[in-house]
Amino acid sequence: MKYVLLGTLDPAWAGKQADRLKKGEAKLKELGIKLESIHYTQGKYDFVDVVDAPDAEAMLSFSVWYATQGFGRIQSLPAFEPKTFEAATKRAAR
Image (tube, rainbow, N blue to C red; front, side, top):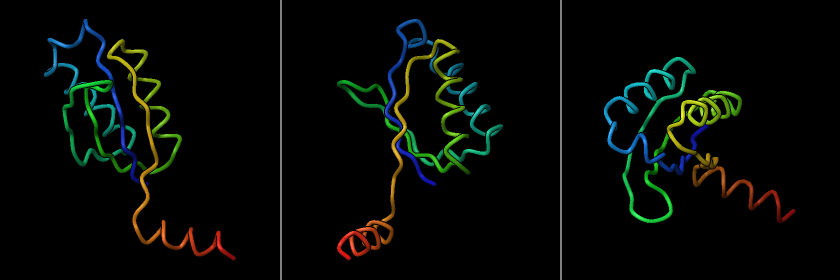
């Protein structure tokens, strides 16, 4: 399942990007989550990532781990493919 991650950085980690990224990527790999893209943003969120997770529990585990490391916070949003959305709208219309 794909997820879009909306994340904020704790100010203490803002200048330690390489270390935070290295630790984060290792934890993602450990949980079986594939990092597809990273985008840094301005505004409410500091970054937007796209990942492919084996299940919701893995995604939740990563979000909790990220917060407990003091890196910041992540909101994870399930991301549906167009075909899945089309099938859901047809099913809802029945």
